[in-house]
Length: 368
Ligand code: NAD
Ligand code: IPM
Ligand code: MN
Image 1 (tube, rainbow, N blue to C red):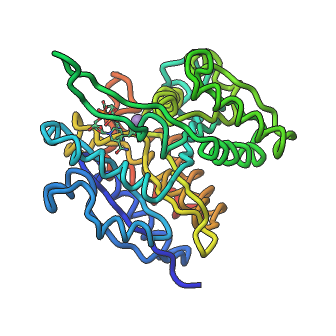
Image 2 (spheres, rainbow, N blue to C red; image 1 turned 90 degrees about the vertical axis):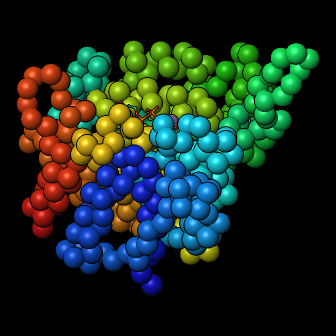
């Protein structure tokens, strides 16, 4: 088999800072585990806009389509707030997701024991937590037409459209049921069928797919607002949550705080299998470019490193090596290593981004 290709798009703000730590880990796997990747780098977001006047160059899009996996840092930042909507950094990321047809966005929220005290929720609420949010990523209100800011009489009106087809719902539902079978065998589907027709269709299609193909999996439904409340009240009731693009965006940020920090949450965005059997895939932390701490060496690289662990598992069939990396992170945290986002005001000196990366490499080294 030829060396698998990995396209790295560090992006903006803390994106390049956290990605530098992932590169250390990729190098370690190449040197010490014989896991070689054909790694190449390119620009996305504001960084691409600065060079090309577009947040995603067509050449980069074409390279992403061909890569076995894409690893992205983060996009956006205040410098780009003034740009026209069509060339904002976030448009680059949305184009990647849409054109690669990455419809299933897996956002696991796991609470590492060492951080259970740090969550803003009580320890017994979060200790041992392991849930998976499956967010539909290529449709819904993010992409529905009509959209725009229009003139209506004397005033402007902002329009976005929530739109889902049966097949869009069915394919992400299948992803959620498949994942559940390999985990706790439970799926909770969240929508607002009480107020939205798209929610009624969502609930119907998920139920039909369940009855026809996944009756062995336990299925429940919840209105997404109640789901947000239940995520904070007793998150351990959930195994897999499947929901639409916008609700999934909100619910996954909320789930981040169950784990202690947004700096801990990875994600995998998966599409249909390519000719080589691998799914089209993009891996990225759930967090953004964190302009408030960018350039200061304060960012937590763990979300991005865990995103690479997801790449090992979902794109490269290296589940054992993914577990090795996750265990190394768990060990580092258990030993007390903390970036600033994982510390209270108690005067402990935090590790820098790069020191955290080094600590993870050292913990990996100790496993062989
Ligand atoms: P953000 O996730 O960038 O930051 C929210 C808060 O979390 C900030 O206080 C930040 O310092 C902190 N934080 C985030 N990641 C961290 C990390 N790894 N380590 C330590 N602290 C971390 O969200 P925002 O401030 O709402 O958005 C900033 C920019 O990022 C915007 O332009 C937004 O559109 C963009 N954004 C991009 C992505 C992405 O690229 N996938 C995701 C979310 C937001
Ligand atoms: C995320 C982000 C993105 C989204 C933005 C940056 C386009 O918030 O990945 O969660 O809204 O999907
Ligand atoms: Mn988000």
